[in-house]
Image (tube, rainbow, N blue to C red; front, top):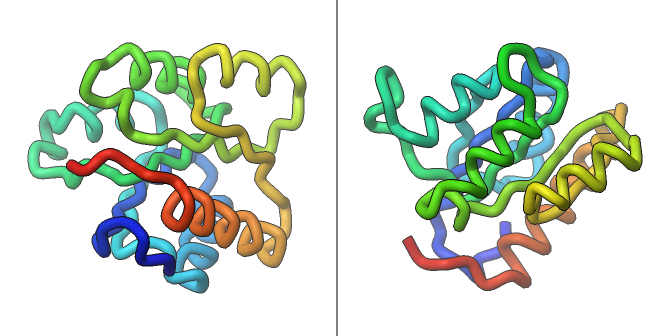
Amino acid sequence: MNTKTCSMIHILLVDDSEDDIEFTRKALDETKLANSVSVVNDGIEAMTYLRKEGQYANAVTPSLILLDLNMPRKDGREVLADIKADPVLRKIPVVVLTTSQAEEDIMKSYDLHANCYVSKPVDFVGLTTVVRAIDSFWFGVVELPKK
């Protein structure tokens, strides 16, 4: 793990696929990117978490959000729009991490102010490589706001 920024890195993973969650968690563990990871399974739960409502009243504000696009109830595009419209939440970097490589999804994500768009590899080795790149960039190169 890079140590350029604070030593406590918390990631919010927003994804509805149990397989993708498991692979992403393993990749995060292997790369030692995060001190802790919270997982929510859809956009409504993501916004409840980020707004620290209900069961998430004591939630840790994430250093980074890994956001899937295609989810039930409220998809990632809607979540991204809500995050970037909120003056407090918009400072949290959002990495769209999805299997979609559709140009429309890429353009829409950037239109909604995603910090970056990453096509999720379908194999563990590829995903681990992507997670290492996320670590290197977001926690080794970029200056993030202090909390």
